[in-house]
Image (cartoon, rainbow, N blue to C red; front, side):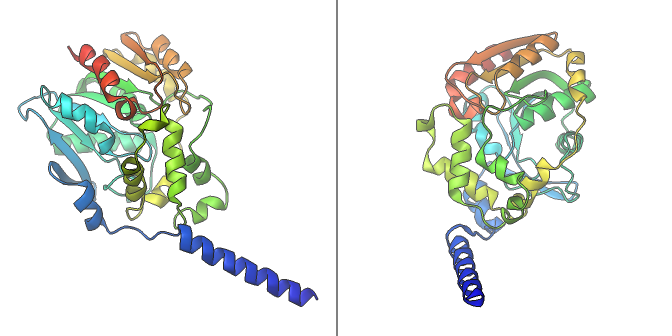
Length: 312
């Protein structure tokens, strides 16, 4: 009887594994296929520290102080598409896919600390011969932006922080993909079993108005996650060691700063905006009603209005 039960159990396990793999097991999408879809002109690539970095440089090429925009975790330069379509009429706008995300691919050394990202931004800007910029970032990108500004103050003219990371804060709700990437055992199979529904649920988590989420938007997040190396990098990012006292440096930043925050941000709640506001000596705080964690994507017109006012 015991042998029979074991056989039934093994059959059931194998059947379940095959079913899961057939439904949610995805191979990496070839890079050239992703480039065709997500890197049309004006996209281009530049070699930085052994990586072919995907970026776009648009607007007035003679502008000596461009706007440089940095996206957040699991996103890509496309998250600033709407902003750029307007900003490039009057400014030079540069944005890139950070290592681990989009078409750039992972860091060769798998070091996803904020310090390594800051060094990457320095090398990226040096490669483009940019010595000074208006620096903006969302979420992780915001954390990179203020750390960069603190370390290289002469390279930054103004600072724009959009639902930025930096302070220890408790999320009201974590995207499902974030939770899975940090779960023991589960994270090890996340690199080849990546249900699209997990990606969709994660995007819904960072939007306040779910009606603004299109299937095309979800496809973009999902398909770029399947770029070779990105799924492992997504997990490695959550294991990075960062300086937990770095937020003490925020009050030392003297640059004019725009703090732009979604009132209904569940990942980095609006309380963090007030911490930045308290510590930064030269800032403007704008809270966007009925907006979540990615204002430039969810509510581009409303959020850009505050940016244009700040720049002028």
